[in-house]
Length: 161
Image (tube, rainbow, N blue to C red):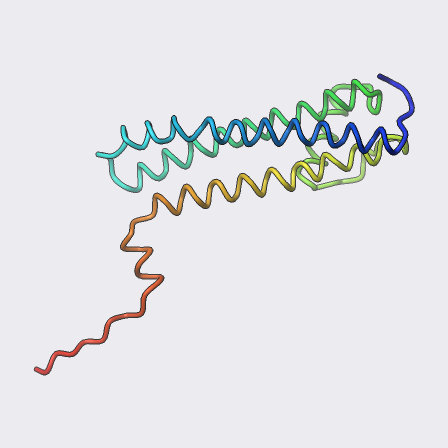
């Protein structure tokens, strides 16, 4: 592309890339459910701690993969649009922006800053979805006895001895 982007262009393309990332992320999470169920059935005879660690680790690995794909997609679009020329700079900027670390040592030209900010919005949204997914997974793997011990009051003893 390599041309000056208007604010409406930046809003449009930022929304497009954010939407692509959301589709990728939700799609990969949804695609992960079936294999996790199969892995869970296969691990049923293993100890609860091992099963929880393996299933959570597998989910975590897929989530990291999904975030990595999105960061690379943002880097590609930054280069395609001419906001950054060097791949290393585009990848670095994407990581720092997506994770909302925002060091500020590398900034986009003014005509791309609104577009670049969408990378941070994407990261916030997708990390939130990832967190919800992992919390749901771990909650479903937690022993029911532990869940009950947090939810119920201790029973009083009525023994008259």
